[in-house]
Length: 304
Length: 304
Image (cartoon, rainbow over all chains, first blue to last red):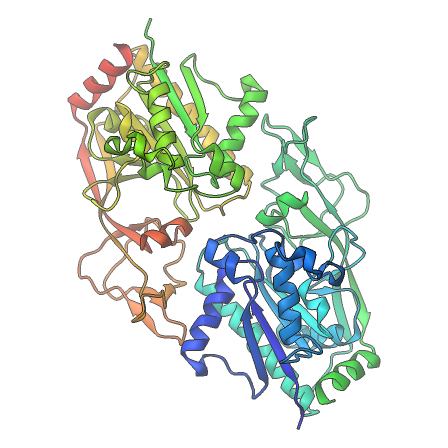
């Protein structure tokens, strides 16, 4: 009998409330979620920000899992303390050690249901392959972005971010909740199938590999002076090509996409990324052959 | 020559940023907005909340125009102080007295472009008639709601709220900005036509009169335990009838609309109204005959 334990996190960003609400309803009604017998620990990532209706208090919690920061000098920073606490409880050597972390987010972008994978860890790619095979989810592979580090799931041996949108922050949407429930249950189902050695892996994985992010147009003082063009709004996952309309300047001028290469944009107009100077991220769609070592890594983790 | 002055307010709620951005761009490029020669004063209603990325600091500014509150004892409440300050500058006896106030908002509800009128002041109804005649805008007539008072525009002799959605809070959307610009210019155009005595009034006004608001379903502890049903989401302005799906409880149970009368719902799932215990408001659609005294009231105000 395996002792796999899965950490389920909602509200890593306090104003992404739909997964939090699903967890709360699950607390009240145990049969709401089929866990397929997998042991889970569910937490609200940033309860203080949730209570305040904010994304975070001092720092983005999902950029705070940087072990070098976990010193006593940072105890005034809520998110860094919270990251250290979560690791102390649910980390590899914690009181309730979890091997897999699933981190449930929402976005104001029209991303639909998708997965975010950080880097190329074999066990992440194996679990993502299973979910893509079952549900058809697109995958955003986030890597090579030195400006963005310290993600929660990277602190567990295997971990995926689930992103679902569009939904405003602080707003309940039954469709988003229903999509969250489907992915949550599918993750646990696939982990159970791995545990039972009864799983089908696809022979390929389609990823949208992060290439770079682009900022809004700005005036000489650094203020945003153009919005995402209406023809580009909600066009996450659609190819962005030379001369496509990209931004609209108020007096009516259109800024077009000037690169010769075609990219697939994601996180177009995510409200929380404005402070990170990101209007959208550009990816390349790649089809990867499934590798047997991915499967081995996930099996080693789950079956121990 | 009339001396009509129009107060234009964006960001009465600090996280409704699209009108603020339009005003900022207008500051940089005077020709961006055609004012039709009307003297305007534009302000950011709640600059402190805007900087904090929040709806408000201590209190909803758009419920803070309650003159009884403007005593020195309230100086620790930012919004009450701000309301008093705005009136001192732009009120009837202020340094820059404005006769008309236009307050630009956005909503997470699928309201499209619409006007909110508070009560039945003749000049408000006249201006709303002109805008409905020009643009076809639906009008939400807010009255008989003792739980909701202290609205900004009520402190000016004539005032309308412009609501545009859906858009998430804190998110730029060029379509919302473009819709805001159209209504702003149309308001000023119509005021100019009144000034020039060159205006066409329609013979009827269609209003959606507020009847009551309804709350989310709640559990025994008062926590929300059901969302707006997916079949009802985004159905602002559509008739809501007996047995229509209204809320969805997580375990799959549907709560249906139980009233025999048909209502027209508005502000379905506005994120900021959750704290006000409002899942949506119910209205009755009424067609009113245009009254000559409405026209007279607006003419008296504009032509002085």
